[in-house]
Amino acid sequence: MMILDGLPYSVLVTEDGPAEAARIVARRGAACVVVFDRRIASRAAAVRAALEAQSVRVLGERGLAAGERRKTLRSATDVMHWLTSLRVERGTLLLAVGGGTLTDLAGFVAATYLRGLAWLPVATTVLGMVDAAIGGKTGVDLPEGKNLVGAFWDPVAVIGDLGALDTLPRRQRSTGMAEIVKSGIIGDPALFEAIERRGMRALDAGSIGAAARVKIAIVAADPRDSGARAALNLGHTIGHALEAASLFRMSHGETVAVGLRAAGMLAMGEGLWSKAEQARLLRALTKCRLPVHFEGLSVDAVVEALGRDKKRVDGEMRFVLPVKVGEVRVGVRVNAASVRAVIERCGSPPTADGTA
Image (cartoon, rainbow, N blue to C red; front, side, top):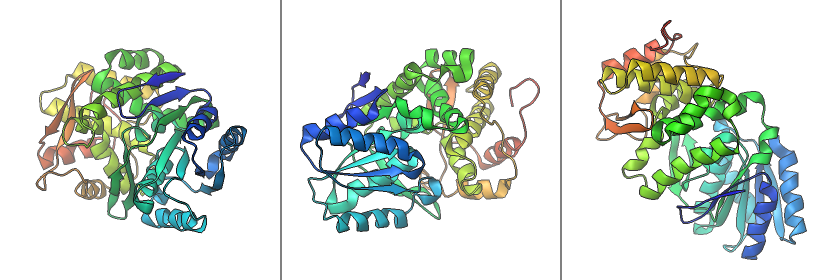
C-alpha cells in the first residue's frame, strides 16, 4: 500500500480498498451510509463485508446509475431524500464507491446535506484514483455545462482501490490513461517517458501513484483553485466542450485525449511547444489506445459549448498549454479564430508526420 501525504487527508493506493475503508470508518466510531455505482455491485459487496467484519453500523446502502448524464441536481436530491428517510445525522459518514462521476455527486451531497457530512471516496476507476477523488472538488452538472454547481469539501481520506481495476472494461482502463498522460506532461517527465515506452502496460500501481502525486502537489499549493491549480485543466477546456457537444457519448478520457492534442496544437501556434514534443504526445496517446480526433460532431456545437466553460475570465477563454514535457503555462490567451481552426483540425486524424 502507498500512503501519499501532502494534503489535510491521506491518499491511500491499495489492493484492498474495502478493508482500508472499513478500518477508517471503524476508527471514527461513526455509523455510515454507502452509495455505489450499480455497475460494480460486486465491489460494493466486498465493502459491505469489510464493514461488517469491523462491526461498523451501516444505516443503508444505495446503488446509483453513474455516468456524466446522471450527475445532476435531480440525482443529488434523490440521494438526499434517501438520507432523510434513513434519519441520517451529522455524525454519519457517507462512503462512496465508484468512479469520478459517482464520487463527484456523492461529495456534493456530503458537502450540502445537513450543511456537511464526513465522507470517504473509494475510487474504483483510473480517473477516480489519479484525479477526480483527490482535491476536495465536488459537483454536479447543469444542462448548460459541466460542474457548474459544486463545493469544495475535503474527504476524511481518499482510497484508490487497485483491486477494483479488474472490474473495468478495457475501454475504461484505456480512457483513464488520458489523465496519467496529462499528469506526466504537467509535472513528471519520467512518468510520461514510461507511458511512451510501455503504453497500456504502464498502467500499474506505480503510474497511478505518480499521477496522484502530481495532483496532490498542485492541490496543496492551491487548494481553492485560485491560480496554480489551473494547470490540472490541461486538455480539459476543449475536452469538456467535446463531452457536452457529444451529449457525453464520448467519455471524459476520450475527450481529454483529443483535448491534449488540441492544447499541443494551440501551443505550437503560440511558439511554446515543439513539433517533436507534439509528435511524442500523439504517439503516447495512441499507444494507450486513446483517440486523437473526434467524429460526427459539429464544430459549431463544440465552439458553442466552449463558450459556456465555467473557467472564463472577464468573458474570455484562457488555456493551459504545454511548454515541454514536465512544464505547462496557465492563463494563456488564444484568439478565437485560432481556437476554431484547431477544433476543426481535431475532427480529422493527425498528419502523416504526427504533429498536427
